[in-house]
Image 1 (cartoon, helix red, strand yellow):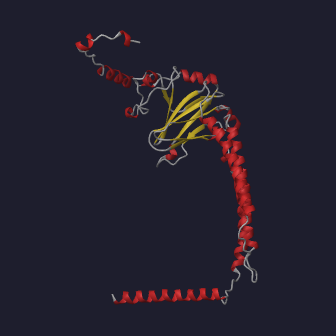
Image 2 (cartoon, rainbow, N blue to C red):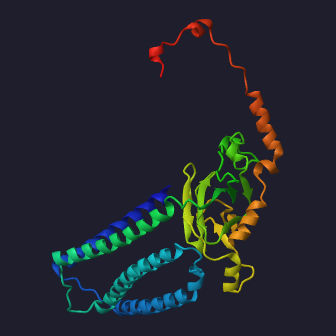
Length: 357
Protein backbone atom coordinates (compact mmCIF):
# COMPACT_ATOMS: atom_id res chain seq x y z
CA UNK A 1 0.00 0.00 0.00
CA UNK A 2 2.87 2.38 0.86
CA UNK A 3 4.59 1.66 -2.46
CA UNK A 4 1.35 2.42 -4.39
CA UNK A 5 0.93 5.72 -2.53
CA UNK A 6 4.52 6.74 -3.33
CA UNK A 7 3.98 5.84 -7.02
CA UNK A 8 0.79 7.94 -7.22
CA UNK A 9 2.58 10.92 -5.60
CA UNK A 10 5.40 10.69 -8.16
CA UNK A 11 2.91 10.54 -11.06
CA UNK A 12 1.06 13.59 -9.73
CA UNK A 13 4.35 15.49 -9.37
CA UNK A 14 5.24 14.70 -12.99
CA UNK A 15 1.84 15.97 -14.13
CA UNK A 16 2.24 19.18 -12.12
CA UNK A 17 5.73 19.79 -13.53
CA UNK A 18 4.44 19.18 -17.05
CA UNK A 19 1.63 21.66 -16.62
CA UNK A 20 4.04 24.26 -15.19
CA UNK A 21 6.34 23.76 -18.18
CA UNK A 22 3.47 24.25 -20.64
CA UNK A 23 2.34 27.32 -18.72
CA UNK A 24 5.82 28.76 -19.08
CA UNK A 25 5.74 28.13 -22.83
CA UNK A 26 2.34 29.80 -23.20
CA UNK A 27 3.60 32.80 -21.23
CA UNK A 28 6.63 33.08 -23.51
CA UNK A 29 4.44 32.88 -26.60
CA UNK A 30 2.13 35.66 -25.45
CA UNK A 31 5.07 37.84 -24.39
CA UNK A 32 6.80 37.29 -27.75
CA UNK A 33 9.99 35.83 -26.26
CA UNK A 34 9.34 32.21 -27.25
CA UNK A 35 11.45 30.83 -30.11
CA UNK A 36 11.44 27.31 -31.50
CA UNK A 37 13.66 25.79 -34.13
CA UNK A 38 11.52 24.30 -36.89
CA UNK A 39 14.31 22.27 -38.45
CA UNK A 40 14.09 20.22 -41.67
CA UNK A 41 10.96 18.29 -40.80
CA UNK A 42 8.63 21.01 -42.10
CA UNK A 43 10.35 21.13 -45.50
CA UNK A 44 10.35 17.33 -45.74
CA UNK A 45 6.63 17.20 -45.02
CA UNK A 46 5.97 19.91 -47.63
CA UNK A 47 7.87 17.92 -50.28
CA UNK A 48 6.05 14.73 -49.29
CA UNK A 49 2.77 16.55 -49.89
CA UNK A 50 3.75 17.09 -53.53
CA UNK A 51 5.01 13.52 -53.86
CA UNK A 52 1.70 12.20 -52.53
CA UNK A 53 -0.28 14.45 -54.90
CA UNK A 54 1.65 13.36 -58.00
CA UNK A 55 2.13 9.72 -57.03
CA UNK A 56 -1.43 9.26 -55.75
CA UNK A 57 -2.88 10.95 -58.84
CA UNK A 58 -0.84 8.73 -61.16
CA UNK A 59 -1.83 5.59 -59.28
CA UNK A 60 -5.50 6.58 -59.39
CA UNK A 61 -5.32 7.21 -63.15
CA UNK A 62 -3.67 3.82 -63.76
CA UNK A 63 -6.16 1.97 -61.55
CA UNK A 64 -9.11 3.73 -63.21
CA UNK A 65 -8.00 2.83 -66.75
CA UNK A 66 -7.01 -0.72 -65.79
CA UNK A 67 -10.35 -1.54 -64.11
CA UNK A 68 -12.71 0.55 -66.24
CA UNK A 69 -14.22 -2.44 -68.06
CA UNK A 70 -14.87 -4.27 -64.77
CA UNK A 71 -16.77 -1.40 -63.20
CA UNK A 72 -18.49 -0.39 -66.44
CA UNK A 73 -20.05 -3.51 -68.01
CA UNK A 74 -21.74 -3.30 -71.44
CA UNK A 75 -25.22 -1.77 -71.44
CA UNK A 76 -28.09 -4.09 -72.35
CA UNK A 77 -31.20 -1.95 -71.76
CA UNK A 78 -32.83 1.09 -73.34
CA UNK A 79 -32.75 3.32 -70.26
CA UNK A 80 -29.22 2.17 -69.40
CA UNK A 81 -27.64 4.65 -71.82
CA UNK A 82 -29.37 7.57 -70.13
CA UNK A 83 -28.36 6.28 -66.70
CA UNK A 84 -24.78 5.93 -67.90
CA UNK A 85 -24.73 9.42 -69.36
CA UNK A 86 -26.09 10.97 -66.15
CA UNK A 87 -23.63 8.99 -64.04
CA UNK A 88 -20.57 10.15 -65.97
CA UNK A 89 -21.78 13.76 -66.12
CA UNK A 90 -22.13 13.67 -62.34
CA UNK A 91 -18.72 12.04 -61.96
CA UNK A 92 -17.15 14.64 -64.27
CA UNK A 93 -18.59 17.56 -62.29
CA UNK A 94 -17.60 16.06 -58.93
CA UNK A 95 -14.26 14.84 -60.28
CA UNK A 96 -13.22 18.25 -61.63
CA UNK A 97 -14.16 19.93 -58.34
CA UNK A 98 -12.31 17.24 -56.37
CA UNK A 99 -9.18 17.44 -58.54
CA UNK A 100 -8.98 21.24 -58.30
CA UNK A 101 -9.52 21.40 -54.54
CA UNK A 102 -7.08 18.57 -53.77
CA UNK A 103 -4.39 19.96 -56.06
CA UNK A 104 -4.72 23.36 -54.39
CA UNK A 105 -4.70 21.77 -50.93
CA UNK A 106 -1.42 19.92 -51.45
CA UNK A 107 0.19 22.76 -53.44
CA UNK A 108 -0.64 25.29 -50.72
CA UNK A 109 0.87 22.95 -48.12
CA UNK A 110 4.11 23.05 -50.10
CA UNK A 111 4.16 26.68 -51.23
CA UNK A 112 3.19 28.18 -47.89
CA UNK A 113 5.36 26.08 -45.63
CA UNK A 114 6.90 27.86 -42.65
CA UNK A 115 9.66 30.31 -43.39
CA UNK A 116 11.37 32.63 -40.94
CA UNK A 117 10.14 36.20 -41.14
CA UNK A 118 7.01 35.41 -43.18
CA UNK A 119 3.66 36.00 -41.56
CA UNK A 120 0.32 34.52 -42.65
CA UNK A 121 -2.18 36.93 -44.18
CA UNK A 122 -5.41 37.13 -42.22
CA UNK A 123 -8.36 37.03 -44.65
CA UNK A 124 -11.51 37.72 -42.65
CA UNK A 125 -14.44 37.68 -45.06
CA UNK A 126 -15.49 38.31 -48.66
CA UNK A 127 -19.16 38.44 -49.60
CA UNK A 128 -18.49 38.06 -53.33
CA UNK A 129 -16.60 34.81 -52.88
CA UNK A 130 -19.23 33.49 -50.49
CA UNK A 131 -21.99 34.18 -53.03
CA UNK A 132 -20.04 32.60 -55.91
CA UNK A 133 -19.19 29.33 -54.16
CA UNK A 134 -22.73 29.02 -52.83
CA UNK A 135 -24.79 29.84 -55.93
CA UNK A 136 -22.76 27.97 -58.56
CA UNK A 137 -22.71 24.59 -56.69
CA UNK A 138 -26.41 25.04 -55.85
CA UNK A 139 -27.32 25.53 -59.53
CA UNK A 140 -25.16 22.62 -60.70
CA UNK A 141 -26.47 20.23 -58.03
CA UNK A 142 -30.09 21.26 -58.61
CA UNK A 143 -29.68 20.56 -62.35
CA UNK A 144 -28.20 17.13 -61.70
CA UNK A 145 -30.90 16.25 -59.18
CA UNK A 146 -33.71 17.40 -61.49
CA UNK A 147 -32.37 15.32 -64.40
CA UNK A 148 -32.02 12.29 -62.14
CA UNK A 149 -35.51 12.77 -60.73
CA UNK A 150 -37.04 12.83 -64.22
CA UNK A 151 -35.28 9.61 -65.23
CA UNK A 152 -36.07 7.90 -61.92
CA UNK A 153 -39.78 8.71 -61.97
CA UNK A 154 -40.03 7.35 -65.50
CA UNK A 155 -38.44 3.97 -64.80
CA UNK A 156 -40.19 3.46 -61.47
CA UNK A 157 -43.56 4.77 -62.64
CA UNK A 158 -46.32 2.93 -64.53
CA UNK A 159 -44.88 0.43 -67.00
CA UNK A 160 -46.18 0.11 -70.59
CA UNK A 161 -49.31 -2.01 -70.97
CA UNK A 162 -47.50 -4.68 -72.99
CA UNK A 163 -44.91 -5.26 -70.25
CA UNK A 164 -43.88 -8.72 -69.17
CA UNK A 165 -44.43 -8.99 -65.42
CA UNK A 166 -41.93 -10.80 -63.20
CA UNK A 167 -42.01 -10.76 -59.41
CA UNK A 168 -38.91 -11.43 -57.34
CA UNK A 169 -38.75 -11.87 -53.60
CA UNK A 170 -35.53 -11.79 -51.64
CA UNK A 171 -35.01 -13.99 -48.62
CA UNK A 172 -31.99 -15.11 -46.69
CA UNK A 173 -30.24 -16.26 -48.81
CA UNK A 174 -31.66 -16.61 -52.33
CA UNK A 175 -34.17 -15.12 -54.76
CA UNK A 176 -37.66 -16.47 -55.41
CA UNK A 177 -39.15 -15.78 -58.85
CA UNK A 178 -42.75 -16.05 -60.03
CA UNK A 179 -44.69 -15.22 -63.18
CA UNK A 180 -48.41 -14.70 -63.78
CA UNK A 181 -50.11 -17.43 -65.77
CA UNK A 182 -52.20 -17.11 -68.89
CA UNK A 183 -54.61 -14.72 -67.17
CA UNK A 184 -51.63 -12.29 -66.90
CA UNK A 185 -52.55 -11.55 -63.28
CA UNK A 186 -50.42 -12.32 -60.25
CA UNK A 187 -52.47 -14.01 -57.57
CA UNK A 188 -52.71 -13.17 -53.89
CA UNK A 189 -49.95 -14.30 -51.56
CA UNK A 190 -50.22 -14.55 -47.79
CA UNK A 191 -47.20 -14.73 -45.53
CA UNK A 192 -49.16 -16.88 -43.07
CA UNK A 193 -49.25 -19.65 -45.67
CA UNK A 194 -45.47 -19.78 -46.21
CA UNK A 195 -43.93 -23.18 -45.51
CA UNK A 196 -41.16 -25.39 -46.89
CA UNK A 197 -43.18 -26.18 -50.05
CA UNK A 198 -45.19 -23.01 -50.47
CA UNK A 199 -42.28 -20.60 -50.13
CA UNK A 200 -44.19 -17.74 -51.73
CA UNK A 201 -47.25 -18.19 -49.59
CA UNK A 202 -49.64 -18.77 -52.53
CA UNK A 203 -53.27 -18.37 -51.54
CA UNK A 204 -54.78 -20.93 -53.90
CA UNK A 205 -58.29 -19.91 -52.93
CA UNK A 206 -57.66 -16.95 -55.25
CA UNK A 207 -58.33 -18.03 -58.84
CA UNK A 208 -55.57 -15.76 -60.16
CA UNK A 209 -53.01 -17.78 -58.17
CA UNK A 210 -53.91 -21.10 -59.76
CA UNK A 211 -51.90 -20.51 -62.96
CA UNK A 212 -48.96 -18.59 -61.44
CA UNK A 213 -45.65 -20.43 -61.81
CA UNK A 214 -42.23 -20.19 -60.19
CA UNK A 215 -38.78 -20.64 -61.70
CA UNK A 216 -35.17 -20.81 -60.57
CA UNK A 217 -34.01 -18.33 -63.20
CA UNK A 218 -35.45 -15.22 -64.80
CA UNK A 219 -36.38 -15.27 -68.49
CA UNK A 220 -37.28 -12.03 -70.28
CA UNK A 221 -37.80 -11.28 -74.00
CA UNK A 222 -35.59 -8.92 -75.94
CA UNK A 223 -37.16 -5.61 -76.99
CA UNK A 224 -40.20 -5.96 -74.70
CA UNK A 225 -40.67 -3.87 -71.53
CA UNK A 226 -40.19 -5.90 -68.35
CA UNK A 227 -41.81 -4.87 -65.06
CA UNK A 228 -39.96 -6.22 -62.04
CA UNK A 229 -42.15 -6.32 -58.93
CA UNK A 230 -39.99 -6.62 -55.83
CA UNK A 231 -40.59 -7.94 -52.32
CA UNK A 232 -38.54 -9.01 -49.32
CA UNK A 233 -39.48 -11.84 -46.99
CA UNK A 234 -37.19 -10.95 -44.11
CA UNK A 235 -34.53 -8.21 -44.20
CA UNK A 236 -33.39 -5.45 -46.55
CA UNK A 237 -32.10 -6.78 -49.88
CA UNK A 238 -31.41 -5.08 -53.21
CA UNK A 239 -32.20 -6.09 -56.79
CA UNK A 240 -29.06 -5.29 -58.75
CA UNK A 241 -28.65 -6.16 -62.44
CA UNK A 242 -25.56 -4.25 -63.60
CA UNK A 243 -25.84 -4.83 -67.35
CA UNK A 244 -29.41 -3.49 -67.36
CA UNK A 245 -28.50 -0.63 -64.98
CA UNK A 246 -31.22 -1.81 -62.61
CA UNK A 247 -30.93 -1.10 -58.89
CA UNK A 248 -33.84 -1.17 -56.47
CA UNK A 249 -34.20 -2.07 -52.81
CA UNK A 250 -36.28 -5.01 -51.65
CA UNK A 251 -37.84 -3.69 -48.46
CA UNK A 252 -39.76 -5.84 -45.93
CA UNK A 253 -43.42 -4.85 -45.92
CA UNK A 254 -43.08 -2.36 -48.79
CA UNK A 255 -43.33 -3.67 -52.38
CA UNK A 256 -41.19 -1.76 -54.89
CA UNK A 257 -40.93 -1.87 -58.68
CA UNK A 258 -38.67 -1.11 -61.63
CA UNK A 259 -39.20 -1.54 -65.37
CA UNK A 260 -36.70 -1.74 -68.20
CA UNK A 261 -36.44 -2.94 -71.80
CA UNK A 262 -33.66 -5.45 -72.64
CA UNK A 263 -31.83 -4.78 -75.91
CA UNK A 264 -29.33 -7.65 -76.13
CA UNK A 265 -30.02 -11.35 -75.79
CA UNK A 266 -27.80 -13.58 -73.70
CA UNK A 267 -26.42 -15.27 -76.84
CA UNK A 268 -25.66 -11.89 -78.44
CA UNK A 269 -23.85 -10.70 -75.33
CA UNK A 270 -21.85 -13.94 -75.21
CA UNK A 271 -20.74 -13.36 -78.80
CA UNK A 272 -19.96 -9.70 -78.11
CA UNK A 273 -17.80 -10.51 -75.09
CA UNK A 274 -16.30 -13.68 -76.57
CA UNK A 275 -17.39 -15.57 -73.47
CA UNK A 276 -19.65 -18.59 -74.11
CA UNK A 277 -20.26 -19.01 -70.37
CA UNK A 278 -21.51 -15.46 -69.79
CA UNK A 279 -24.88 -14.95 -68.10
CA UNK A 280 -26.67 -11.85 -66.91
CA UNK A 281 -27.22 -11.98 -63.18
CA UNK A 282 -29.42 -10.62 -60.45
CA UNK A 283 -27.37 -10.02 -57.32
CA UNK A 284 -28.09 -8.60 -53.89
CA UNK A 285 -25.71 -5.71 -53.26
CA UNK A 286 -26.81 -5.03 -49.69
CA UNK A 287 -25.03 -6.97 -46.94
CA UNK A 288 -28.00 -8.98 -45.67
CA UNK A 289 -26.34 -11.62 -43.50
CA UNK A 290 -23.69 -14.29 -43.31
CA UNK A 291 -24.44 -15.88 -46.71
CA UNK A 292 -25.09 -12.63 -48.56
CA UNK A 293 -22.57 -13.72 -51.21
CA UNK A 294 -24.91 -16.55 -52.29
CA UNK A 295 -27.80 -14.27 -53.28
CA UNK A 296 -27.54 -14.50 -57.04
CA UNK A 297 -29.95 -15.54 -59.78
CA UNK A 298 -29.38 -16.06 -63.49
CA UNK A 299 -31.17 -13.74 -65.92
CA UNK A 300 -31.67 -14.99 -69.49
CA UNK A 301 -32.71 -12.63 -72.28
CA UNK A 302 -34.40 -14.59 -75.08
CA UNK A 303 -35.62 -13.71 -78.52
CA UNK A 304 -39.39 -13.07 -78.29
CA UNK A 305 -40.30 -16.38 -79.98
CA UNK A 306 -37.94 -18.35 -77.72
CA UNK A 307 -39.44 -16.63 -74.70
CA UNK A 308 -42.98 -17.55 -75.79
CA UNK A 309 -41.93 -21.20 -76.18
CA UNK A 310 -40.28 -21.19 -72.75
CA UNK A 311 -43.31 -19.52 -71.18
CA UNK A 312 -45.74 -22.01 -72.74
CA UNK A 313 -43.74 -24.94 -71.38
CA UNK A 314 -43.97 -23.85 -67.72
CA UNK A 315 -46.22 -25.61 -65.23
CA UNK A 316 -48.07 -23.68 -62.57
CA UNK A 317 -47.30 -24.04 -58.88
CA UNK A 318 -50.71 -25.71 -58.39
CA UNK A 319 -49.92 -28.29 -61.09
CA UNK A 320 -46.53 -29.09 -59.58
CA UNK A 321 -47.98 -29.34 -56.06
CA UNK A 322 -51.40 -31.04 -56.31
CA UNK A 323 -51.32 -31.94 -52.62
CA UNK A 324 -51.15 -28.25 -51.67
CA UNK A 325 -54.07 -27.49 -53.98
CA UNK A 326 -56.04 -30.42 -52.56
CA UNK A 327 -55.45 -29.15 -49.02
CA UNK A 328 -56.82 -25.75 -50.02
CA UNK A 329 -59.91 -27.33 -51.59
CA UNK A 330 -60.53 -29.47 -48.50
CA UNK A 331 -60.15 -26.45 -46.25
CA UNK A 332 -62.62 -24.52 -48.41
CA UNK A 333 -65.21 -27.32 -48.10
CA UNK A 334 -64.93 -27.50 -44.33
CA UNK A 335 -65.43 -23.75 -44.09
CA UNK A 336 -68.77 -23.89 -45.98
CA UNK A 337 -71.66 -23.76 -43.46
CA UNK A 338 -75.45 -23.63 -44.13
CA UNK A 339 -77.03 -20.21 -43.87
CA UNK A 340 -79.49 -19.99 -40.95
CA UNK A 341 -83.13 -19.13 -41.75
CA UNK A 342 -84.17 -15.57 -41.00
CA UNK A 343 -86.50 -15.02 -38.00
CA UNK A 344 -90.18 -15.01 -38.93
CA UNK A 345 -90.81 -11.51 -37.69
CA UNK A 346 -88.14 -10.19 -39.98
CA UNK A 347 -89.40 -12.23 -42.93
CA UNK A 348 -92.92 -10.87 -42.39
CA UNK A 349 -91.82 -7.27 -42.30
CA UNK A 350 -92.79 -5.72 -45.62
CA UNK A 351 -90.46 -3.33 -47.44
CA UNK A 352 -92.16 0.03 -47.94
CA UNK A 353 -92.54 0.78 -51.65
CA UNK A 354 -91.47 4.34 -51.14
CA UNK A 355 -88.23 3.14 -49.56
CA UNK A 356 -87.28 0.84 -52.44
CA UNK A 357 -84.85 2.04 -55.12
